[in-house]
Every structure is written in structure tokens, then in C-alpha cells.
Image 1 (cartoon, helix red, strand yellow):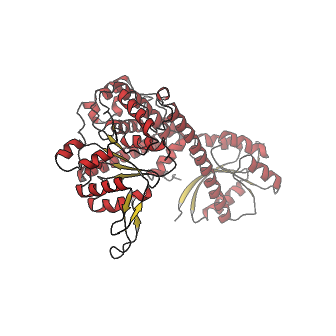
Image 2 (cartoon, rainbow, N blue to C red):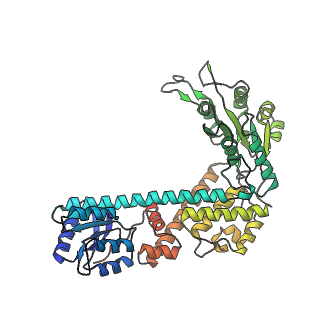
Image 3 (cartoon, rainbow, N blue to C red):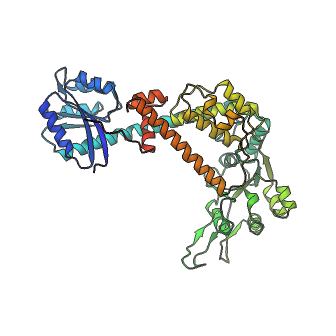
Length: 485
């Protein structure tokens, strides 16, 4: 069975040579060629206008064009499609000039068999795809850099390296001012705030803006690691403590010289809190099962969405650890009520996901903005980001409309506040991801069918680029139906 199919346009004026090429390619075992034949350059260009071709096999001597001018004209019309020149001329200079001008390969008739021809066409296709990928990555990197640099530029603080959007909120600006001041010190920092307010972004800014920026930034989510494993995760484990156990360094040693970010510190057990406090006091780490300690130089930043004063009163959080972590405290404000920030974050995320999904949405309708402003945002900035990401993907117009938002925004049903991360929450997240992927796949199939499987036309209908249409087809395993004879 062929591994994949290639839609090939053969531009060849000699019917006998065309039949021979078809027979040669039909004998290929790993590629199925769906071959269309044109005898003139003009008819070849007409077929290409319909889209859907992966590669072109071109004879340079045609009734309405000859020599390298044939390649120049065709390549100028569809520069994104790889061209393999196949001609009866054995003039090596012509081949060199064709390749220099953009042809992927140059073959002489009679010098290759079916397997070689199929392999060279396949290589040409892979090289062209690699060129497009590299160019796409470079362009995307340039655009994303400009997006980050242009976001909140008037509010940037000298010396602050922050990978998020700089807020309008006076409280958030004050927090970032503190980050800039303490970034170059070793003092521990405690970041408090609801889930989704950007605690990890602020922790990373502390690291990236200081002298430790070139060294590791290690993240440990204390709520995500089972209590029985968290001690080994943090401090490491000694070889031979049990049968088959090998020595493994912990996150403190991995972060040596850099920063260790302990997220959800309020969920750590009291027993492990005592061991963490000793490490913070002495800068010595003792692996599980070891009787010797290792000196470490680590800046610790902790974060929580819990009320640690209440946890201390309940006897489940050590007061000594709180004071050790809380040399500097930053409290991140929730998103609800921050009207200007909601507007700016919405614009920022639309631009961000326009780039990621190759859309060109102009913004959000006024009705959408009103619903966003009225929402309670229990998931804060992270929730807003996911809402806009979904809207950018499903939007069919030139702007985000109310119909592009999740149901609770259209019906006025408030979103449930996030609770503890448990099996139900993870199951819900998994289902939402699966449903989102299914919707995207069905939309793509709908566009392709409307466009009669012409990727160029489907891209126009969807508001995507042709490259992104192919990317989505690969993602969802969608292949073009076989053409009926």
C-alpha cells in the first residue's frame, strides 16, 4: 500500500512521453500519484488556477513556450508549488540555471527509471515544504516579536523583562515596579492571587529581569505532585534506597544558581513544609535516603491562590515558613471590574491568535465587548485568553461576533468558579478539548466540501491561508477523496 498520495501536474507536449511517465509512476510502491496532464503551458496554468496540486513535472519544450522561459513563467505564477524539470535536453547548464532559478530538480528523459523518478519527486516535495516551514517560522517569529514589543509599550518599565501584556491596572503596575526593584536580589518573594491572574508570568519576570536570567528557571506545582512523591521531586533521591531505585537530583539542585518557582505552595503538607523551611534557612539539600547534604544557591519564588493567614490559623501552614517566603509579597488583582484591561487583553489576544491561526480578524463587535465586560471572570486572564482563542478559531466573519463566544456569554448563564483540581475537572477539560477539536474538524470538512476540495478556495472561505488549511488537514488526518475516473 502506498504511504501517501501526491497530486501531480505533468506539463508535457508529447502524449507518448506522458503515457510513459504515468506508467513509471504507477509502478511506485510507496507513493500514489494522482496525475493530471497538460500539453501546453497555457493549459497547465489554467489547471493550476484551480488549485489542489502538490508538485509539477515540467518539460521545457512546449508548443507555446520553450527553454527556461517556460519554467520562469510557470514558477512566477505558482512559486509555492515545487517544480521538477524533466526534458529531453542533456545540456547540464540548462539544469544548473533552472535549479538556480528555483526548480527543485532537473532530470533528463531516458536517464531515470520509475523508482528514481518517484523518489526525486518526493524529495522535491519534501524540500519545498521544509523551505516553506523555515520561512513561516522566521516570519512568525518576527511578527510575534513585534507583537510583544508593541504591547503596552507606553507602560514598559526600564529594566523589566516581562513576557506578558503590561496591564493598565495601577495595582499591577505597582507590582511590576516592585519586581524590577527586587529582581537582582536573592530575597524570597510570595505571589498571591486567584487562579489565572498571571502568577507564573510575574515569577518568570523576577527571574528574567535579574542576574540569574541565564541560569535555570524551574517550576514545581505543589498541588499537581502527589504528597508521597513531592519530597523526592524537590530534594532528589539517593541510589539504592530501594530495589531498582537510581539516584535522581531534585528540583533544588536542578535550579542551582537560578530560580525555583513553587506554585500552589499552600497545598504542601506540614511535614514537608518543615523540611522546606530548613532548606531555605541553611541552603542545604539532603536527598531522600541520604545522610549528607549538598549546598545550593537558589532564589525561591512561591505562589498561592489560598489565604495563608487562614491556613496558619487552621494549623495546616507553618508560620515560620510563611515569614521566610514572604520577604516580599505581591498581590495580583483579579480581572473582573478591570474594564480597561479587559478591552486591552481582548485586543492583544485577538492579535496573538490571528498570528497563530493565520486569521485576519479586525477585532470584536461592540456587543461582544459588552458581554466580556459584564462577565465575572472566575478564571481571570487565563479564562479570557481561552475564550478569545476559541472565538478566533470559529469566527466566520471579519470580526468576533456574539455567536463565536461560549454559550454562557450568549445566554447570560454565569460560568462556574473553578474548584480544586480533581478527576471531574480534568475529565471536563478533556471533554472540552475533544469537542473543540471535533468542531474544528467538522468546520474544515465543510469548507473543503464547499470548495470541491480546492485548498485555495477553502482557505478563502475560512479566512485562513492555504498553508494553514493543509496544516489543519494533517492535524485531523483529513485526506482528499480519490477522484472518480
